[in-house]
Amino acid sequence: MYKCLIIDDEKLARQLIVNHLDKIDDFEIIASCKSAIEATKILNTQHIDLLFLDVEMPVLLGTDFYKNLVQKPKVIFTTAYRDYAVEGFELNAVDYLVKPITFSRFLKGIEKFLTTQQHHINISHPTNSLPNKEYIFVTEDRKQVKILFNDILYVESVKNYIKIKTPSKTHIVKYSISSFEKILDARFLRVHRSYIINKDKITAYTKQDIELDSLEIPIGDSYRDKILKSFFD
Image (cartoon, rainbow, N blue to C red; front, side, top):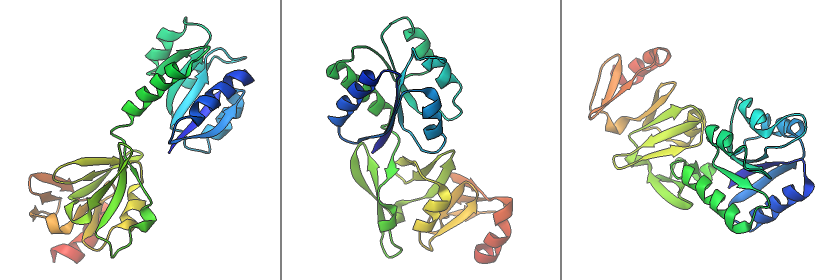
């Protein structure tokens, strides 16, 4: 489910986007705001996947507001004028919709957003992955895909995501490595603040790193003593 935030000082413009989104599955409207100030409170407390942002707003242009965001969700700019289109795309906007926005044109913007998300995979119901299970389901391209624990070579933390590496594929999952660690069973070992490895896949090791065939995974200083005691003795 993609979480959306709408910002527009015109009530009818906000309602039109709400009506369009109501016709599309997998999109949840977190809030519909009439000002940047109102929206800032929400952006500071909730995760937003897609922002619908009007350019011409009182006090602060939508483009200037977006520039000043520390955490920038994907954005689709909306406006009554085409003059801001270049600036919008310079900000890596997903799309730039000119009012009045027809549903067919709106849908093209949504399709562009979904294209940017095709390599981003979210864990589905991680609490169902109990220690006695041998797999976990993740959402990939809007399908539930099974990953066998035994296939996992390692897990790597990358900013707000983790990479789940298997011999055939790398899954990019929006999840913290510490939370994902709790899902895994005893065959997995945290060897670094950014890495968890499958002990069954180890082919060689030193005090500095662990090899999984041709892959080298570093051992973190704060994890070394524990690993030496539990594995390398």
